[in-house]
Length: 366
Image: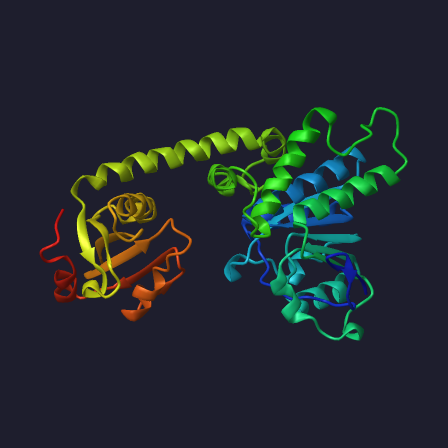
């Protein structure tokens, strides 16, 4: 087995990895596989669905194989057991290479596929979770090649892989010198940087939250089976447009949250043991609890109270209190944990009895 494992540029021992695979085992997908078997298509490409990294990885595989007239079949791969492809589905006549983009299936799947089909299997992933399933190196067949880089998103690793192969192939006249056309290259590479920022949980790029919100609406369109225009659409996406959509969505929610701050009241956290802050009832608007809580946090601090916003609403016959803070020195979870809840310093929640809640707000309306 060949392998590539990078973490800060260092290489580790050979391994095979296991992880929940993703696929859409629909009639249309099975028909496409049957047709590929009839035509003895040598390359099958499976990509993580509905993942941003998976979709863009599929794009680069598509560009490479179409530019070089290499017959291939691309299919989305899902983790839903009832929809997951079986090894026997993928053992098509003439199969030479199977790409696994942005996911690594369980090792049993890899072993069976490599043994039955005898094809070369090349997989890409960036998730630390796969490291839990590293078996002894001598257990892995030589025709399995796994690429794992904890510091690089799968979509970038796949992009670099196929861009490199594209350069290495003897390019015939009329074929573009770059995998991605120059008019799209800068826009696509910026998209990959933003996707990687989310994949690796860095959240460091400007507007990354708005970008992810704008991109999220595309999840349902990432299947090349149901959306034959996916590759053209992915090439046209831009960070700026997605960020604008995300910001519009956030602005709408912010405006809706602001309207609920007209009837705030004081909350004596833990009957005053944890100080006081501002609160508001948000029954019917619990989906805005994060925005409301953060606005309340700022307003609470400006009135001389603790920089915490308390959002209270009924949830399945229980009274729930969500605490939010925009102050890094404030820990809301100390209150939540004391009452059987939990969360992080800036965001926590818990269920509170009505009689206890009444003690927290009695005589403190504002």
